[in-house]
Amino acid sequence: MLGVFSSAVVTPPEELVAAGSRTPSPKTKVTTLVDRFVERTHSAVTVQIGDEGYMAYSHHNESVLQPRSFAVKDEIFCLFEGALDNLGSLRQQYGLSKTVNEVVLVIEAYKALRDRAPYPPNHVVGHLNGNFAFVVFDKTTSTLFVASDQQGKVPFFWGITADGYVAFADDADLLKGSCGKSLASFPQGCFYSTALGELKCYENPKNKVTAIPASEEEICGATFMVEAAPVFAAIP
Image (cartoon, rainbow, N blue to C red; front, side, top):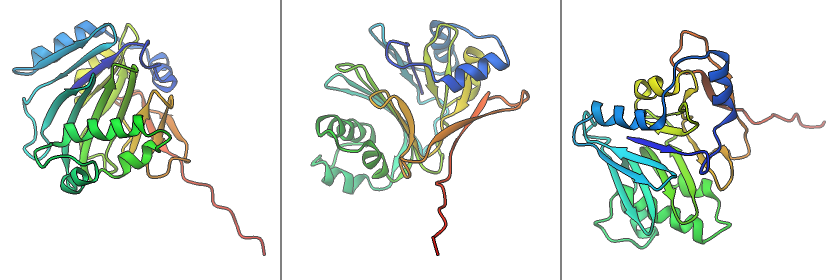
């Protein structure tokens, strides 16, 4: 799957910008990236969302246990890859029918988050059990919401194209050709929301997420890690 969004939607992460600057490498523009995705997959579905970006997916080479899906509802676009173990209980929690699948469930969960503010976003993602990665774009508010499961079972990467678009995909090689070293694995157990403007660990939202520069031989230019909470000694 592939989701790419302009700098009007999401500010390119400073850590990825820095990674590309440390080891300059060839990049391409977003249109070339989208064209490359279509060429590499079969029967790809591609949607251009105005000037904000593109979302695309294909069932080519997908895992039977971690299928890809796409849905649009109420101007909310969602790409989802994986499977939720607790889909049945989540349907009940959000008052949805038994026919609702994972991608529609995530849209409904996002809507609940958006409309019931200040409902904590880490609670929404933390209730999802299973292997997954998803990209949600709310066109009405130009809000981007992205997350990966706690074990990182679904490969998920993000990077920056030559023209400053932030790209999310399950294929590192696809992004490498367009993002160069401005590329990293999206950290497992984390979410990124443009409403918050930062990357957060949904299990420990108070713990800072930092990027560690990677060596030149690695495909990614940085590795994002969740910092451990400080340990305070008891006062005798």
